[in-house]
Amino acid sequence: MSNTHVSLEACRWASRLMVLVLLLAVAAHLLSLVDPGWLLLVVAPLCLLLAVGLLVGLAQIFRLLNANREAAQRILTGNYATSFPVQENGLAGGMQESLAAMVDRMKHDLGLARGIMNSMVTPCAVADIKENFIFGNPALIRMVEQEGRPEDYYGNSIAHFFYGDASRPTVLGVAMREDKSISKEVVFTGRKGGKLDIHIDASPLYDLEGKIMGGPVRVHRPDGTTHPRGPHHPSE
Image 1 (cartoon, helix red, strand yellow):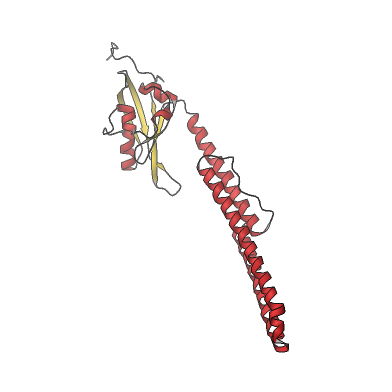
Image 2 (cartoon, rainbow, N blue to C red):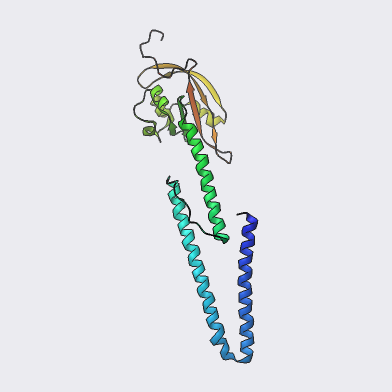
């Protein structure tokens, strides 16, 4: 629903309420001129009905808002199958349609981003703004000579993951601090002593407002090798 449509719907309801209040006020005035007793017998019950109607309407609104809050919390925890309650029409219906469209767009964009990341076969990693490891792939685990799955190391320092030393500067850290992309060739020593001549591509990663939120790093070798050579290889 567009903003214009929402505004028109709100104006209609406000106008109806104002007309109803005005009619009640006029009726109260006319009845008081004829017989003040009519004011208590007729207008008072009408006012009570109006108050009850408003309370019922507010209760429905609060139930809907609470249901939306609970649905949003489930989505935040990763339950993307959650849907917002459906309303048939009116202002509430338009709001629910907009929320559903927003979640569909979010799931599409998130699924696309995750699909691209999970499809990477070249060793790669992503760190947050504090240089904590938040994503990696199995090829990276093999190259670094770590054990287990990438998820086992999420939350650790990216420097500690690669080198075993959290205080050691990384190419990705420099790229984020200097806000620029960096390509660099290095001789990397794996956690078990294996060595590999590699090319590192690192760059800042920006959020939708243009602020740095972390950075990806991709590691590759001209010959396509991703396994380090042994620590006693003759070419060392």
